[in-house]
Amino acid sequence: MEAYKELLNLIKQLSHSRDCREVFTDFMEITAITISNSVDKLNFTERENQYLNTMKKYTPEHQKLFPEMLSRLVIALGNAPFDVLGKLFYELGLPDKNKSQIFTPQHIADMMGALVLSNDNKTISEQGFISFHDSCCGSGVLSLGFANAMGTNGYNYCNQMLATAVDIDLRCVYMSYIQLSLYGIPAIVIHGSALTMEEYSRWFTPTYILGNWQRKVAKV
Figure 1 (cartoon, rainbow, N blue to C red):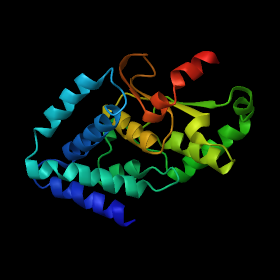
Figure 2: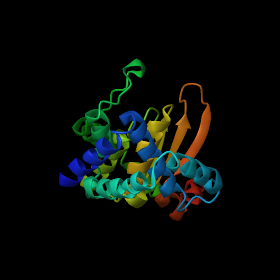
Figure 3: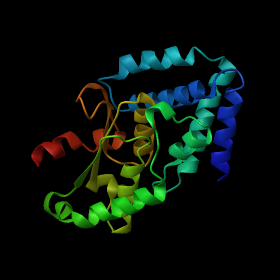
Figure 4: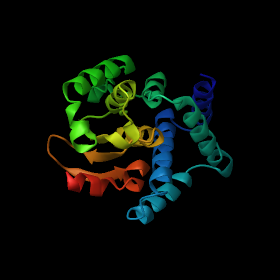
């Protein structure tokens, strides 16, 4: 995975002048906002201001590295859903031990996705799609595992799956949103608590908005 190694090196390069955790978080924020602002006009202004404020922290030379990192990420993701950002998160040593952040390995997520789908594949034939909910999404690996199971069973997760992912950690929201967006999965990613039902923001993937999923769900 040459692109993955290049992405890792670019993050480490930026980390020479500031904390690696901050660089990774800023990269996730900038990328998530870039994707969101391409389709979500309702939240555009607020998120554009957030984007500009984050970018101001870096020199013009360092700002140019963010598009390079995004291009490496897109290549590293490949065709089949795989949790690249979760792997990167761990390799950089960023999980918060105080929050017990332990992400599910990809092969376990794939197995769980296959089991869930096998127990409820009638829903797709009845309503045209199936919903998948992850109340503590981390990097979104469980949704990716379910998408893999759908692909393996001949379904198209780009128009027959709707994911809803929730996490209290905004950085995890960014990671999930980015990967679900770049794999073309219709999804709502919520920054909030699944326990208290508090909600701070919603992030709609491009496939969700362009596919008019709000209307599809309303019809069910």
